[in-house]
Length: 555
Image 1: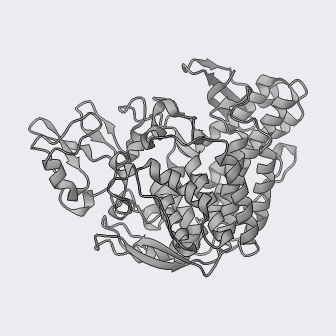
Image 2: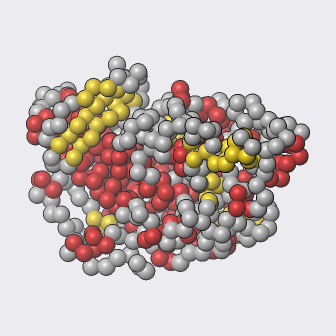
Image 3: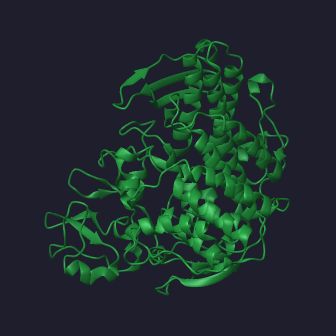
């Protein structure tokens, strides 16, 4: 029977606490034990794997730093200057969680290595279970290294557990060597159970997730090696209402020079196609975020969460759309998307019609009533005519207002409201780490680059996403137009899903796109320097690792 594993906490080398839940969140707690005390059994292997998985939650998602580092440093994200004054303004060293990406990734790698060491020596579990457990840990290591190489460039590689004699100080491996290791790990990870196998644990990755991550790795390598091709990105001066189409020229990313774009685009295409044939797109856009659809359909891998739990809940709902206080006012709601992102959509597109909150509570009360605000401000006539409703069917009552001034014009995304209790600070939004539309767009991009333009299937994959949203299907594009259209579609479909910064980075246009904005309408600085291409390695690592004698350029 499929199980949902929600909760387990592994303290490296010392203690492990595992808790599992069934569909009804029945928790079973285990005593604190060391990995050596776990013994040799199916249960022991399961606890080691689950302990590693929980690092994804406790070191990446729950603290909020992973999503902050991946979402805020891009062209279309914005918010109050206090919230975007560090990472969002190109000053990551001012962010309290700047070292978390490095520390969390290596914590995950070391825990996975420890699990591999212990499980490899076990003999009292089935061959299928053992293969799956080892493959799961390889997948998690690959995911961690993919985060590291995209954010820091060359990074140390730990191929085995420190308890097995691996030196704690390792030199930075080249970008190409890190990618080779990621591919090696993901090829092993394809030995995981499929999502339909009886032994598959809901909330863990399946072999489909390994294929999906491989497709992302391949497309990153391929596009990162490209140069000289034009890419149009709509943006520029925020004082101009409509985002302006600006042509940028792709540049080869440092460290990606040795990669063959044709080879890796072909691998990305083929691996993406395998995934496309295994997963199902939801028919309606808002069904993607329904609580009952978690870990189903197009969700290839999600970060699990438990509402109200200080370790396994998260503040995503509070941060991105706000939580309700007892008086009905809102707390949080700090991060949003800019007008230039909203204006990428056709008016009928469900991703803004339903996917953006048009009526939301503020943190204020007037005459005993909660003050409600509307977005966008240019919809004022629709609001006055009571054509805009909230999710409870409430319309304008004659007293609600638009905030005047651009500082309040931020799109809040409905997806982040899908939690079981919107009054909980630590809520249970299941963040989508791998989702099918991402892979469909990778397929379309790869075909376009390999064939010198889109074919019928490339159009089909993009248009499946667009027609679901009631957007006009693409047609009649040449290679350059389709390249730009796919990148733009990724910005629309995958908003705040930890992809946009990496998409600009892998095409070598991150600096050009950001500097074309300069300062956005919320007075958030978008100007960037060469040093912003990579994050700084933690000072503690540079000081303690005798194999690393300098930080990334500019830091």
